[in-house]
Length: 115
Image (cartoon, one colour):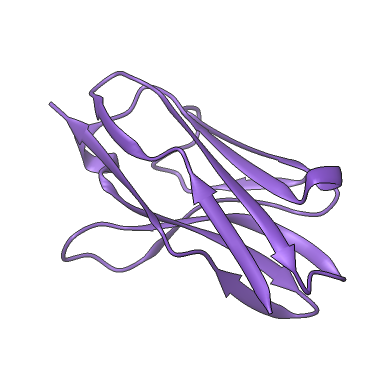
């Protein structure tokens, strides 16, 4: 099965930065898009950023200009560089990877931004 290992979450003050990483392993032949969603308390899970296998990116309006998603295809890894963090960015961040038309999810990593 596909496994996604996330790292980089933590506690940071408003205006600070964090970098999340997610490594895909297992049955990942046919890996295509990778990216990130997040879910804050009491809110629906929402798209943060995605990147296609060829490097095309898509961002939520709320993070555009502050966050950057990138990938290293040789390492089967996707990154999320988060700058100028705001308290409203506080959420559990979930990595996803699309393999042969199916979407797989990481376990989530907590990001907490204090005011």
